Length: 250
Image 1 (tube, helix red, strand yellow):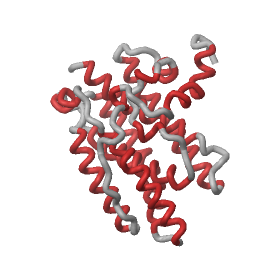
Image 2: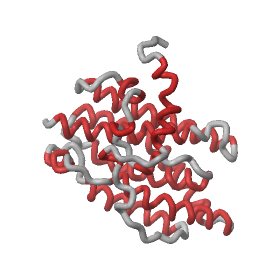
Image 3: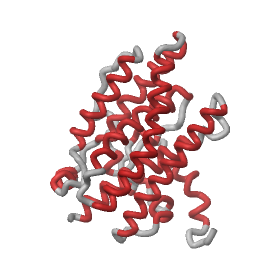
Image 4: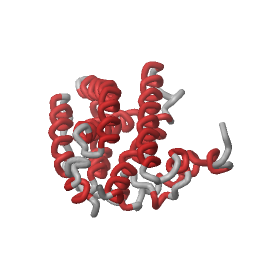
């Protein structure tokens, strides 16, 4: 198996979970109601746990310790997509981003269950179970707010208009994609994207939202180390304590 293709793939899904997990954690203590405060904190914890598990796989492939991989790489070395990098915004944006992200992750995890890389396939089975609760949360709020009062619907429609073009960055193509498919690590990005669209468009339209026309390539770059202006400030904050003394034992 080509380790270059495998490590790139694991890095991108690990980095996505790390950054979205950190972003979602920023709602801790700020949620509009206590239940949502707890929900976003719990989902953030899961995402960070998934990121750690992916980094452990990378450690097994000789890439270094998980904490170092998460906190000591520079911005240009990160493989996360632009969707996860953006600040939390108002709650409508975070809800919509979470919905789009969770369903993309669900489609990818379902493919990884059949991955030729056995450690990844085993991990995907575990993550799939946890992800079901994220999916229920995401779908419930889309349906509730889509059928709620006008202000709620308009806010969520505006959030969809903003977040949908960003979400296509999850499926940004890369030069190593052919190897990933040929080695049966995961399905092709365009196949995952098509399945994701089918699922989310059905839910969104049933909830009364209009699907905006978007430029799917507008926010490409992250998979090749070209990020939004939001990532570096977030990394500076997220890694500050660890970088003070990377060898410290806690």
